[in-house]
Length: 277
Image 1: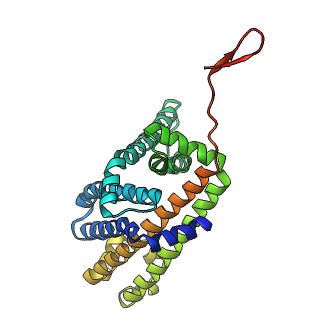
Image 2: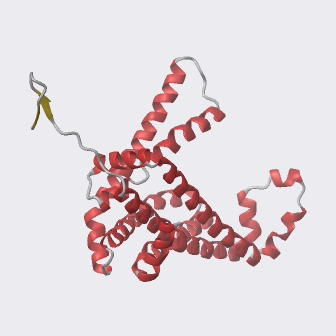
């Protein structure tokens, strides 16, 4: 909780840290509007572009926290300098997860086992969760310790392995904070749309099971779509700065108390004396 408190103090003291939240909130609202009015075809493609742009501001945000100062020009400059150091590890991690997943499926197919949906879901979580947890701090390692692509991934794996209990507590705290914020926004969203959603409370179990997202969109109407977009903007505005600031503070403390053991090269002579190169 000390790191979470530190993150909140940073957000109060450095208003520029809210910029990624503003950008992410705008992207979330725009993507929702495109999905609601145009379908998944355009939304899926714009999602990738929005993610790449948002990563630029997140990199700049991490640099501001690292330097504990800066202005908008420093944020843009440092965001550009560290952009690919933050992006490339994420691409490598995604590629490795997909590669492992494909290899597992090919192995099951070769031994004559037909993967069913339940097995695929189990494999997805079994491969993705450990990979994400172990490499979660690669972006902060790239910025705070000026590490390159594979070095930042290795550093993240080292830190998580040596502080597994603290890392689990970190993820639990993030989940609690995220759930609290989203639950509060859902209550507000339902309060705004209570009149439109009230008929759902009278549905039978069969009707609820057959209820589809398209029916929900038709029920809330255009007004509900815009209210949902506003809620998504607030969610992005709050969650992105809070969670990434918390992540940066937690990494800084975790890395500061974890000593990296470097292997010294050398050899023993015939008398057992050690000569270091």
